[in-house]
Image (cartoon, rainbow over all chains, first blue to last red; front, top):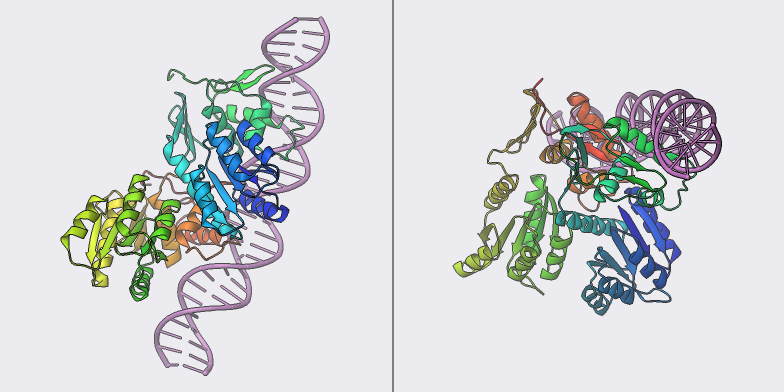
Amino acid sequence: MRILIAEDEPTIVSDMRRCLEDQHYIVSAVTDGEEAWYRGDVEHFDLVILDLGLPKLDGLTVLRRWRAGRRGMPVIILTARDSWRDKVDGMDAGADDYLTKPFRMEELLARVRALMRRAAGQSSPILSNGVLELDTRQRTVSFRGQPVQVTALEYRLLAYLLHNAGTVLSRSQIADSIYDEETELLSNALEVVVARLRRKFDGTVIETRRGQGYLIPSEVPPV
Amino acid sequence: MRILIAEDEPTIVSDMRRCLEDQHYIVSAVTDGEEAWYRGDVEHFDLVILDLGLPKLDGLTVLRRWRAGRRGMPVIILTARDSWRDKVDGMDAGADDYLTKPFRMEELLARVRALMRRAAGQSSPILSNGVLELDTRQRTVSFRGQPVQVTALEYRLLAYLLHNAGTVLSRSQIADSIYDEETELLSNALEVVVARLRRKFDGTVIETRRGQGYLIPSEVPPV
DNA sequence: CTGGCGCTGTCAGCGAACTGTAAGGTTGGC
DNA sequence: GCCAACCTTACAGTTCGCTGACAGCGCCAG
């Protein structure tokens, strides 16, 4: 689950980052509106925490541009002022929730969880391609009907591949999605994860496209 | 099991809170309609007790908004007036039950229990996965047919896990469900509770998914 | 009021599981 | 056949969860 924080105050950012990473979210942070808009437009985030008072381009504008461009990810807006106008404007612009600074981290987390839950409730909780099945609500994986245990990292990788079943995904796309941005990829870590997964199923589930990346076929006839 | 009380009269709130907390429910309370709607929209509650005569936003409107937004939790409405119109309107708006003020706490509790049971999707008050059995009416637990004594906290944890048997539940989900919102989770308290429970059964009943959470398997062949 | 008791949170040390690294083998394309 | 890309395996560092001991709290009986 990737979260984008758009906030220019360093201490708030680092507090939020720490809390969210404790909850195993993958956090990216930007400090001005232009960058916020760009990242949210170009990358995939499961949730955005957006300060309204950003330099260069204010939060409301960023949000409106995203929505105009059909970026529908849940957005929580932060406002320093306790004015209901901001909140109303924000909700009208397409925000899903708001928080007034200062706020307690627990409250932020509760709202994040709620939005994640709501977003999850809208899509089907089961990802499947015929042989491989992933229940995103139960966080379980099964192969040809047999339950299989996977680690947290393996699960993230599987979920990403299966979510984009039929599409070839490059290493860097995969890495972006399952690691946070600081972690460099200077070894064959990804290959190793793939290998470990293959051993748990059979070697054919995850296909390699030499020079391009990996993919999981979108529909496989059952056996 | 979390309950939201939306009621503006302090004495009624505190009476209800005391009774419900005696029954080991986790209670949150709000005093106006706007906050009620917001909390119910954003957080997860297993049941709501909703006064119809709330300031700022009346109860019926709150309820209709929740239902429009697909919030399906059971709702008991309270009405000060003994008029059938309110009740009918309330039920039409999606309430599951009603109570006319003044009422006796025992009656409230009975209705709460009934709705909880119904929401659990089973007429029987017994939760079981084959080896572990939990009688929600008597608040007793047995393992392989043998009764086992558990503390209140342990019971809440077990009930939550068993209620979602087969699902991996993260620490924060569990904490949300068994503690009230004020309590911080800054240590390994949860792990300790799990350990104590494991010692009372055998170590295999509650499974750990490292980095993800805990789960109780949904169906275990009896021995 | 006091002491005992049961419940629960905190802490520290240990062990196991997870994951990145590296080295050597294998495969596929040119 | 050669080279680069990829796979596999083993290993080691690190993180995460478990456990046992302890302490604080609230409750009840004396």
